Image (tube, rainbow, N blue to C red; front, side, top):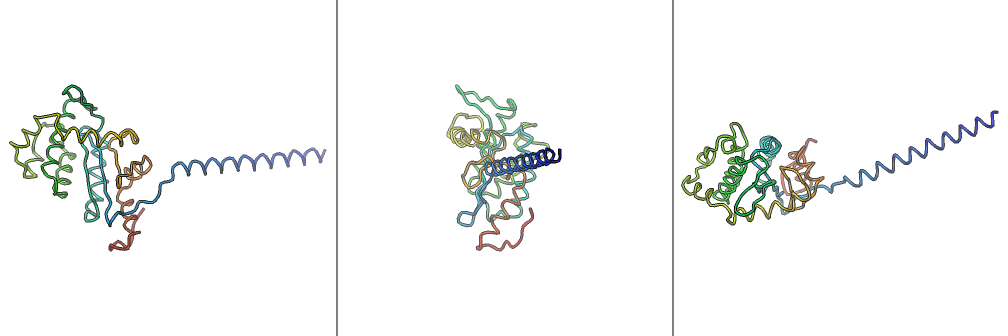
Length: 228
């Protein structure tokens, strides 16, 4: 009788060990699949490309929180690029947008305004922060308030907005295609032109921390500490 129980005990122990080993293997596979190589600077800079769409609450939250904080802290090390397109489709001269007509109009306005502000990153960032903060002038109000605050010529801006289907739309559509195919989320976040879903997820949750640790690994700046 004791021998039988000993055998059962040994068998049970072996089964527990096998289960534990299986769990470890699964965890290792999960970690391997989700591993993201540490972000690094390129010539001392980090490029952030953000695919946006005007009516998206996730885009609002990312621009007003994560991106704003990161830019306030590290703007001298950042190159910011906005792609106001999202899930837009453009067929036969007509836009179809995720959040309707207002979304289409505001995205077109953003493309025009950003183009007119090209070469002035601070002005572009301030402009987009204005558009993605209450009362959301272009999307909700159909207004040029943020453009006027940015000092843009509203006559030229209005002409641009009215002439759809030009190079601005073509470029935005092309720039959004691959990030949306891989990431399938708005805002899509691409760092240093490397399209990666896991890196996007990290940036969406904790962009300032991600940037800080990349800068910390670069000896050519004065960053000395970071918070996770």
